[in-house]
Image 1 (cartoon, rainbow, N blue to C red):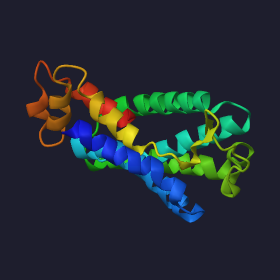
Image 2: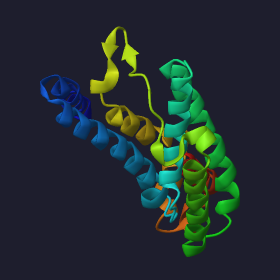
Image 3: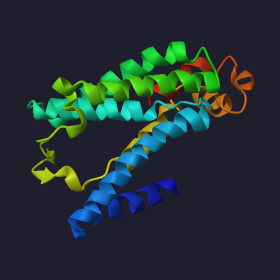
Image 4: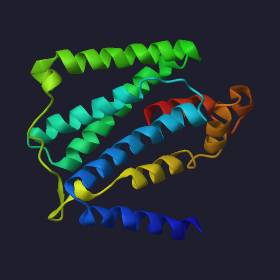
Length: 201
């Protein structure tokens, strides 16, 4: 049933911008970006039960990385892959030590990281242009078509929903991590690995 519902959702999202005015496209793009951020927060807080306040920091790191690279002439796909790799590496490095603490202590650690990222993005004007932001970002194109009218939130949701179904016990660990980490610690459910993967999504 889901196989038939997914095209019914994707087709209107792809076709809608062709009938919208610029402000409608702006709202649809903003909704798409916020949806992708909410999906990552749902994995960390909803499934893993980790109170993380660093979601906005990772969104900012990825966005600034892609913007800086595309303004330097990098193709979109290469900038996107490198931005994803940088966010993954930072999330993995932050995830292992941060997951040694729980609950509000983890919130303090991730809040400190978010504050650090905010200060760097605001004050390092030589790199991020400070409060003025990065201008002149080229519009991405795909096969000659402008991708400013396309949404990636549906594909992101599909990737995240499948990411913990690959290994036996992965989804069990993910669903069991939030209500009871002890119950999720079974030989087939790698709870620590699943929690760390949630922090890097």
